[in-house]
Amino acid sequence: MEPPEPQMLKGALTLLLLSLLAEEEDYGYAVVQRLRAAGLDGAGEGSVYPALARLESRQLLEARLVPQGRGPARRYYRVSPAGLAELDRLRRSWRAVTAVVATVDAPALAPRPHATTAPTGRTA
Image 1: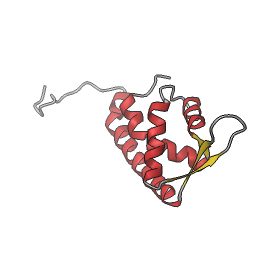
Image 2 (image 1 turned 180 degrees about the vertical axis):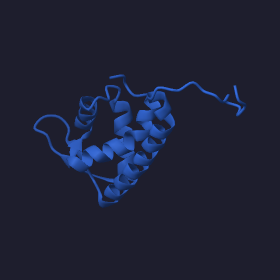
Image 3 (image 1 turned 60 degrees about the horizontal axis):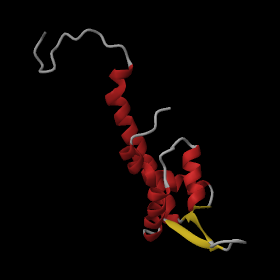
Image 4 (image 1 turned 90 degrees about the vertical axis):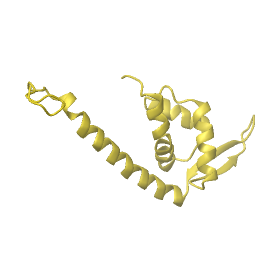
């Protein structure tokens, strides 16, 4: 599978993070690994960690520190009630966007009959 365009990933990152964390509470690096396992090889810590911090500051995520046997405590994230509402809104928005893309791009997927009208509206 071809990797997604970086700008598409950037636009969908909030939806992806909220969706993953609604399934299961997790810490930052594990979220990166889950995104990569889902096929987003380009998902990196440099984009995920700031996005997690932004979602927490917007109160869409709640975080808690979990001490580790060795090393620093891990910051585990879970979706807040406001985050669940935002996830629902983003899912509806994503479906609307993909429906438009499917509608516009549908002709590219189907065989095209010979055009009888030039793009300017004049007959060929």
